[in-house]
Length: 99
Image 1 (cartoon, helix red, strand yellow):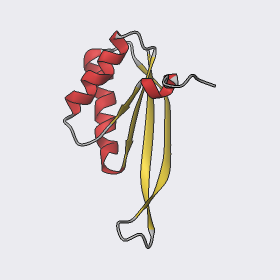
Image 2 (spheres, rainbow, N blue to C red):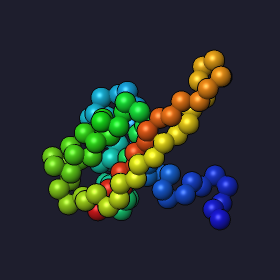
Image 3 (cartoon, rainbow, N blue to C red):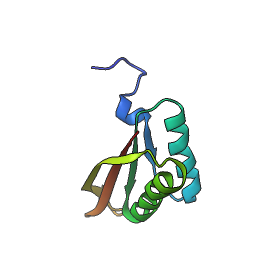
């Protein structure tokens, strides 16, 4: 169990991918690694999945060649629709980078 106000390690080193440019997320990953993190989790869902993969590849190939992909997880989230009558399925991905 963790203390109140302290996030578990997996959540503190998570980069959630959205609509911003790829380099913003690359900088977030690099900052986490330079801050002492041994592991960074890149998470995305829906259309942002391709951007998450781009982020991981830029981090690995251009900036931190010693970083390796340790785990890739895929799944599906059910989101309620705007009208509330039926839920829609959205694909998710979590890529864990380890130094």
